Amino acid sequence: MELSISTPALLFSTVSLLMIAFTNRFMSMASLIRDLHLKFQKNPEDAIFKQIENLRLRMKLIQSMQIIAIFSLLFSVICMFLLFMNEEMIARWFFGIGLIGMSLALSLSAWEITISTKALEVELSDMEDIIAKRK
Image (cartoon, rainbow, N blue to C red; front, side, top):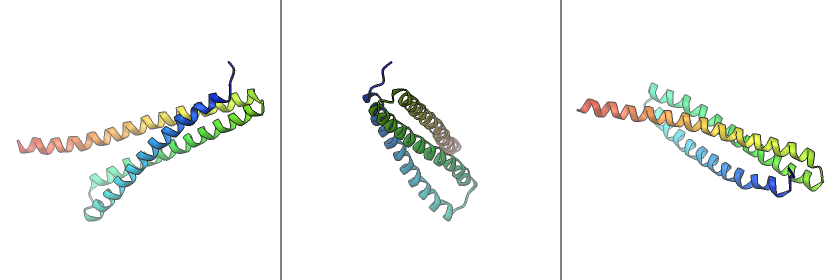
């Protein structure tokens, strides 16, 4: 397989879209944490403490996803430079590492989504319990 300079360039759009998605998650989490902080100051409940633990793990995952995606993009840039310098064999390694990084970032993203979904299920079950008590 021949590796052309346009091949690693394909990662630019992919990683850029991932970075936008990861940043959007980060911003929504930051807003949620700020709201939770206000609620906790008014009424420090155990339920809020459980949410804090969940949010802390999710923030670490999002940070890791962003850092790995940035390194994936950096490896793609280095790959393109190496191709420009006619160092195809070394460029293949950098491209491969970039692909692995992108795959890892996507895997962490799936894990973070799973954690987020579980947290929402807890919220829904709390509301369902309240509705069941009213009947």
